[in-house]
Image (cartoon, rainbow, N blue to C red):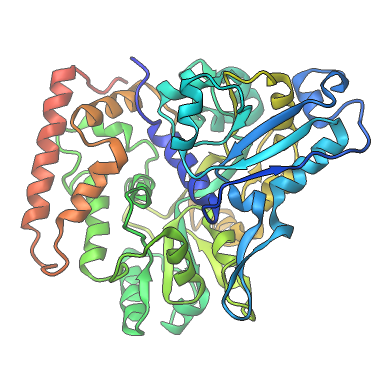
Length: 481
């Protein structure tokens, strides 16, 4: 199977944990070089098998990251409603300074907003990038641009089965992901749901819909979507796993000729989202950007978002002065018929550029990151490397308690395998894969001025089912046990 398209299960998780981590879209270049004492054996050195890093002292590595909030600090509001950056939460900047002090290796941090800013550099084999965190490469691009980090087997020994959902070609891991997290759940403003008569996110879809109606009756938008772009609809991919109670539903599209019909997990999930749209649960006017969508939840103008844990600290940082940031909470989605679940996935990818001239220093820094449980927790994730005592962020408390009590079950992200790649090939050839068109085309087919008329939606279902079946047949691809 040729290398093709984005890793559907693993990279959907990566994207949702990393993409909007920019927390604002400034470009920046922050030199965090420092002086101070070297240790003979740093955390990174221990993991890479080096006795010391003294030969690398004085060298400089450049890190390019989507996580602008960890470089610049979280966006917050002052008493006048003005946005500022809280540098105390610039966790990556602080970690890099500590790394430099201990090793003598200088670190320059660069914030980028998307892959398009890095792709031209890699295409000409520019060596100015040493480490990058871009989450949305195709597998082909990972192989072209990233230095293989380890074998899958070696990563499994350190990270368990979470390694299988990291960007890999079945043999090599291209980007190591040292954290784990609960993905795609309900990020909500507690004050909003209490005002609607609820103390927690309801356990059933029926009650969830009633809560949304009560929120709407209070003049508040139930769910903030930010539909101006397609990527927020990526959440459908994980929610389909909750609908089916099966983390492998993306690949299992191959098992059917009609994956977009409401009798199939994906079709049922997209129909559910679109029904919420018909009910008026999403914003009546499109938010201009994702920051505005987060502000609406922080200020109680919207009740919730359906996203991963990465968005929680960002919304908490936007809560108006005088409000307790802990009013922003994170809970499992309701039971859609197969049980109540939350998806667990690897988080926070780090890759070494294939064209870097400082690969040894780059690897030392990534290993240093992987062994700092506090940094990983401050970033909203849980340290997952063997031998590292994890620190669980407070934002997971509700989910942890529900998992411990059995009220919610954990689904582990499905590994990328032959079936996943085959399904991507079919969707790609059908013109449905890029930019989540297989969700967006359906979601957008419903005219909100005629929310009870599903004719255009059903026509689009038929069109996508036919295209999927035709290209699956043309490519000769079927489910492989």
